[in-house]
Amino acid sequence: MLSDQVNEELLHAAGDRLKVIASFSVGTDHVERDALKKRNIRLGYTPTCLTDAVADITIMLILMAQRRGGEAMAKVINGDWSKMPWHPLLMVGPQIRGSTVGFLGFGRIAQASLQRLLPFGIRRAIYLTSKPGQPVREDHFGLIKSAAIPIEPAKSADELASESDVVIVGCALTPSTKHMVGADFFNKMKKLAVVVNIARGPVIDTDALVKALDEGQIFGAGLDVIENEPNIQADHPILQQPRCVLVPHIGSATIETREQMATESVKNLLAGLTGEAMVNELEL
Amino acid sequence: MLSDQVNEELLHAAGDRLKVIASFSVGTDHVERDALKKRNIRLGYTPTCLTDAVADITIMLILMAQRRGGEAMAKVINGDWSKMPWHPLLMVGPQIRGSTVGFLGFGRIAQASLQRLLPFGIRRAIYLTSKPGQPVREDHFGLIKSAAIPIEPAKSADELASESDVVIVGCALTPSTKHMVGADFFNKMKKLAVVVNIARGPVIDTDALVKALDEGQIFGAGLDVIENEPNIQADHPILQQPRCVLVPHIGSATIETREQMATESVKNLLAGLTGEAMVNELEL
Image (cartoon, rainbow over all chains, first blue to last red; front, side):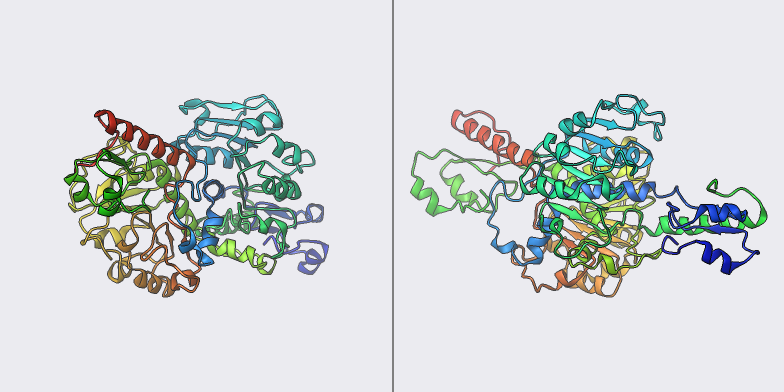
């Protein structure tokens, strides 16, 4: 598991008969690769099979951010529903139909999210990758080829920020993406736009997000991840923002996905013992 | 507005020159139709234009119910995220891919919701109308004709309950649909199924729902409406259920929808004054 450290100490205790490790995870930060390499131990992991689960939660967070879901639930929970007299603009939020959706990172999960968004009536999709302005190579679900709306590369983060009604953060965390969504980015966003992060917390500068929500620079946010997770205390400034929905990194938390990860881990383990090809093996 | 009573008192005070009323609403329960008819006053209303907004919230509530969104948000808000050590089944819920989705009522909003659900990879849709076992006449978005999955009428509420992984309540409230989703219905539902209500509260028997959630007969619920709304106090039993998400009847609460309702109301008013056809006029 991600929570188990695979280091010299563990490998020494395991002894010479250890031939293979199957990690039940997408990331392998918990494994000291050099230590494995030195001992010729093979490493299996489960980087695929999360796509559907994470794409589903992306749509959930977009809708929660646009439709003020967290704020709405809180009002009910606090017993305030009866104190909200009806008027035409009570609890309104922007509608997704007609939106331009901007993807920061446009890999498999982002494209699966776009696929789900099409029947909501979005108008246009733009994306920014490490090669701004260039079309992505992989069209995982044939959308770029066949969708009825334009799907185009953005030339810059500024363009993505200023033209999107929905921004989806789905890129890897690297030195160049850290805090990429910060004060400058929020400054350029539309006042009715929302931002969703299903990738890694530090891509968004949390302080800048709190300020952007406070000052109404953007409409709302939906986060599955955040800087310094899971150490988010009840008095964290982001939790004081009614227009921000934060869930505890549950993007891949479906029964089906976790069962598939377990099955693939066992397959990797058996393949490691019999010398066959793993479902996914990490080159050490 | 829905909150204004149009009755003898108001009409008397308005006097003989009142020729037309434009109600900014889908329902017209707040209008005494006979009183209008007697005075030859025309009545406009805005029954259309909510479809997108309500279909969007339907998807939000399905995902929130399956993915334990309310429970997950509450854990973060209470500062408990750091106390949730990772394990493979932490906060897992059922995945929508492969689901059978059952619609109680299959009008325009239900069909718009189905249209949105298709790219999530659902396997089959069934629906129950006032004519069980008979195909619906109106195929609003050409789905029945062209969708790649079976879309079929259910023969009974029992069949809908027992075969659905997701139940969407989208029917009108009538004497025969009141409490249609009650103890018997929940008894037949799958343990991993969720129910969503975007129609009218009393179609679901709230006491039975609380019991079904309490006893694990179903996995979760997502409600935009509930019996006795808006008088839901903080100690209401449904609010003690972590697997139930309840929002305060915000299904149509988008800026775009409410603007369109306003525009149509003004058009209805002008048409009423000039004797032309309204966008939507209620026959009195």
